[in-house]
Image (cartoon, rainbow, N blue to C red; front, side, top):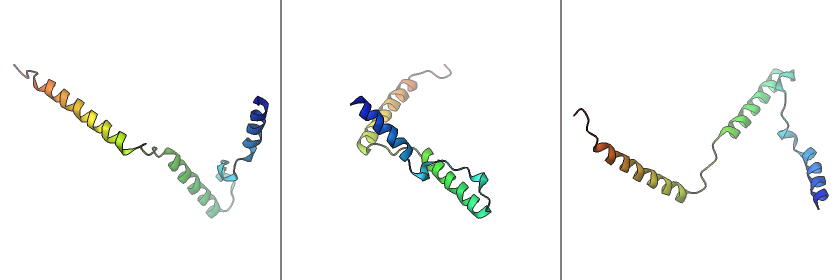
Length: 85
């Protein structure tokens, strides 16, 4: 079982799509093609850097409510501090 899984992984690695392979745009001779290559790489990089969407609105709303309650507790405690007594 262990060997079959290892063999499956070994076969899957070279089967990556050509688009996933990083291109070296500077070696493309035609300027429009080279600029298009750079633009594609820039878009792919921007897509990778985007933050992941939140898992669910319910969890986010609950987190915001909890933060609001904590902020209110801090404001109440700060209100009791004597400023310039």
